[in-house]
Image (cartoon, rainbow, N blue to C red; front, top):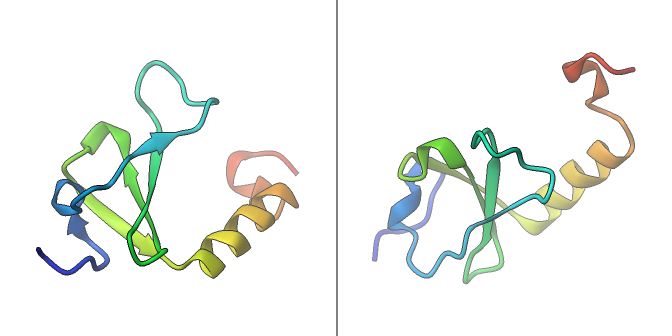
Length: 80
C-alpha cells in the first residue's frame, strides 16, 4: 500500500469511505472527507474523485471546523 501523504491520489487510499455534507449541491461542487486508519482525515474535491487528497490530523480539522463555526472565514465568501 502506498503511504498516505498530502497530494496522494485519493483513489489510492485503501478502505477510505468518502462522505460529503448534507449541504452539498447536486452539481457536484463539494468537498468530501474520509477518516483514515491512523485517525487522520483526508479531504478531496468530489468533482475530481481520483485527484489529490489533502491529509490533516484530527486537531487540524477540529481547529478548522471550529473556526468555520465561529465565522473566521466568512470574509472569504462575502459574508462578514
